[in-house]
Amino acid sequence: MQDALMIALGTRRPQIRARWEDLLRAEKVSTPLANPDALVHLIDWTLDEVFRTLYSLPIRRRPLRAFTRADIDCPCGRNPLLTYFAAGEQAMQESLILSQAESLRLDPLERDTALRELNLALRHIARREIGAFCALCQFRDRASADDREVAHATVP
Image (cartoon, rainbow, N blue to C red; front, side, top):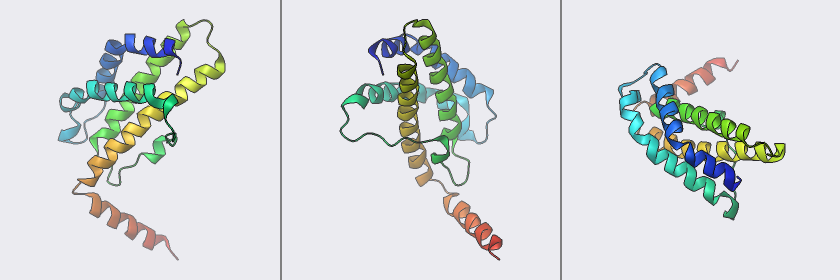
């Protein structure tokens, strides 16, 4: 990502944080751990991780694998970080697009690359953190068993 866009995103950090929190509070709370009051404390740490990852992307020897939202999975669907990272992704993308709109001479290829790199960084962190949370989930084995039952029921 271009340095100018990184600086613009860094400058917008307070707005990103506020938007992220607003999006979290707009979502339906599915579990006590998904309460926005519990999750907002993670935003600053996550933003630090995103910026650290973005700064390190060009010098990485082995690039991160590009993930889609479909790759970020939770077997039981109760992981509070699913909503947390979806809200963060939206807040970061909105901020990047606003920053890009202010840059009159931004090449379309550079614009697309910046969005791709932002998604790459966010989804890499999301997958890691969601996976770590899912590893502790008490519903994990039950969700896997339910999936197996559905798979067996559909086999003729």
